[in-house]
Length: 378
Image (cartoon, rainbow, N blue to C red):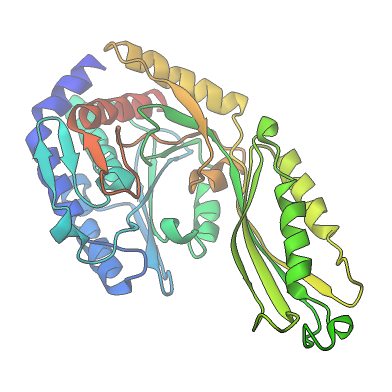
């Protein structure tokens, strides 16, 4: 660890130059042209830094960013999956408002924390191993351009490319420096109610209010939350009705569900399947599903974390672990039974916020640690 950290520290300026170039390429999830330009730059940069891959596979992302898979040789049969996304939540023009800047140990710029710094870590970790003459396992670098919008196009690619991997490092931002060994599963659902429209004053008995139905549904859904088990159900959007004097013919509720175990996901599924209208003349329809499966802390993930913790301790770093409510592409990999260390990227704060920033010292330490962990996995 010390030798790797010394080498990485000696290349601080080069790493920051790469980070600047990457952050100054704006890549909002909703702008296909910008995503294409960013991925083209990444391809050239990766070839320059790591050489051409043994295998290059690109998948069309449709309206979102394309997915690119790059295989690099190493010792062993099973690759280690290194997972990064290059899309950000920031719209075009944000760079002019929040330019890339290094002020002492603090680096700022749109997407620097979530998660452009993480890819720079991964690349320079591999360079550090090469410079030190240390072995590494086969590396499968997977770049996605739709993580911030739910990974609809990239999910099947991630699952296919992860199959058979020895382990996965997800270079998402850390949680106050902690590695994420567990993440909640995320469900995005919609309940639509259909009633019967009628004049609310003249013919109230002829009407069947969809708003009344959806209001009852909201109370039912919120009662499903169980904070002790890590389950939250939140109706965040409501729509319905056409006028104050009309019994509403239609109404809808959109909800976000977070669960910490598959058992709780199944409980929520049963509860949604059991929804029934209060008025038999009304109908309730549930749509949507689980956007990301639960990433539970398994024995293999715990073992991988312990290896990383011991390596970090060699240079006096206290590497903590945590469980978080947010999900990532690492959830898909963990659901396949593969050990995953998530949040292996930037140390800092402010994901999706204007105070987004990284620690430059943290960048150097995490790069060296990624190199050491990859060497251990060889």
